[in-house]
Length: 398
Image (cartoon, rainbow, N blue to C red; front, side, top):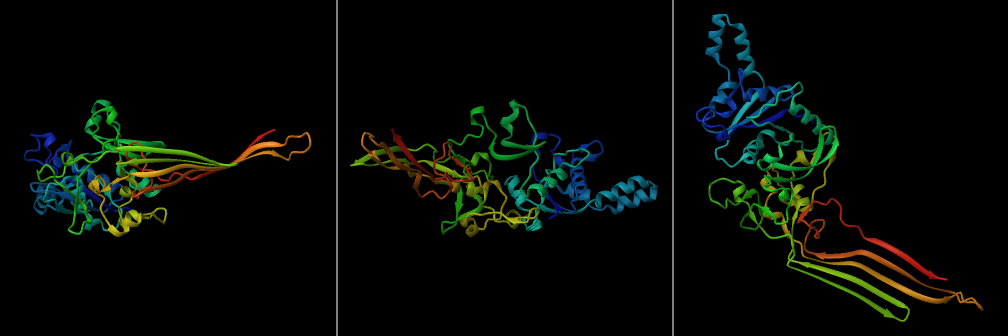
């Protein structure tokens, strides 16, 4: 499906560029002779976008005025014979089908984008930040749209930052595919030390909100500091990936020529962030169906029951996905039979030996419903479970 819709969140207060933004929205700060947000709209249009929703807040009416028609100004320019300026002014109001919606409560970027839910419906869409212009021969958002068509998955533009500044940004774990295209497999928001990057030994999440029936509410987490906003300060340390108790039991039994051995392990009190179910919890048709490759993506059974439609990160960064992963595991079972003087004949003493069979990773007993409860760093993003393996062996002594 061709992407024709874009959302531009432009509701922020612009505190990082005060005092310039005290009375002027940061999106309207000029770059040479045009406001920043106009470059962004033009980039979207150049990439084939025809419908744009700009999410604003009170005090941002000047953005709406900029993209609206200006009959009085146009009449004045025409009367004055300033036809080049007249053409420029008219082109601004005809760039695309631009609509506006207000984010009445400052609940962060994800909430602003969620305001576009009725605008985008079930279609894939582009998101461009209203205060960051990327100018080049080929529109940056157009490149992302191309790769969306190639892979059928969400695509985000990133850049390298200096090591001294990484604590200000989200740190991505990536796998190189080709050229400047990477697969993102993990993320750590604003790591404070090198050791903290991508570490989930202590799991930090937001506190999930539940309805009276005990069901998790989509994209709703607790405002723990009571400031009326959902921010990083509302996250808290919840549970631990390290178990409270570990135990093991190994035994070997022999009866006549038979031998039987097994090995058991138990881990009690370890918690795991279920990254598989969290990452595949979105039932939005635009996520479930790949338009470019024409196939349905797999979804866990409980994701169908919840039917969450959000792209909001708080739906994933929630303690709802942190599960008790205590387990009892049978690592291996071996059954053997020893024999002697096999094929003995006259002076030939025959063969001595043992035939045996071993099964590894025999079973796991756990209430954890993710892929693997035995995760060292507490983050379960394994795509495949551990396999059961079988070995049949024969030892011979001549």
